[in-house]
Length: 310
Image (cartoon, one colour):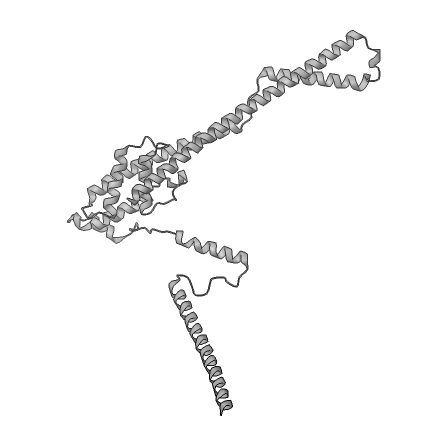
């Protein structure tokens, strides 16, 4: 009896361990599936990573192109040229009923103004949404290169843009014409300033890249040195073996000529070195000026972004 009871107790222990292991495995599988399920539901992308079986280079290219999608922005034209709703503005009825049409025309006028937004490299070719507001703030706060733009003009455009896009008041024909006039004036000023700055940069680059003008005195000295050098080379080739037959005065004249040749060569080398240093100093000043302008523009962009966030 004692042996049978011991055997049954051993069987019970084995069964308990087996059932416990089975329950633990089932709980582990269930928890793992729930975790994977919630992870798949929370992520924005597909359940299977895009290009997971592709080569490494192709996968990186796919990720780069997919990351560019969120930066793609497009603001369509609100009123086409042949839109039938434009005919309603020509009627002599109550113009206040068509405020939304003038608002749409005001936003489309930004694209039609042909302002070179990309000339400074900080804005895209066509500004959309808050970008146009930040561009106007940059023009108002920056010191270069649009310092001559009147602050009243920028304020008029800012008020008109805010009213047309977000305002709840009246935005009729008179407000639209005032806004359109200010936008045309700004486009004229920006185009003129951009053209003059580009011409200045091109002329400065041309002055730095073109070869410096050589004075006639330098040319004559160089020709004289070349003549002496040819004469000495010719004499060395024909009278090397007869040099011991020359008198002391002849040797002194030859040595004086050689010393003068060396002196003139050193002077020419020094002049070329000084000219190179002058050109390098001019390049350094130009780069320093461009760097200061770039830092000022970056600081102004930061201030404009802070004002916009407020």
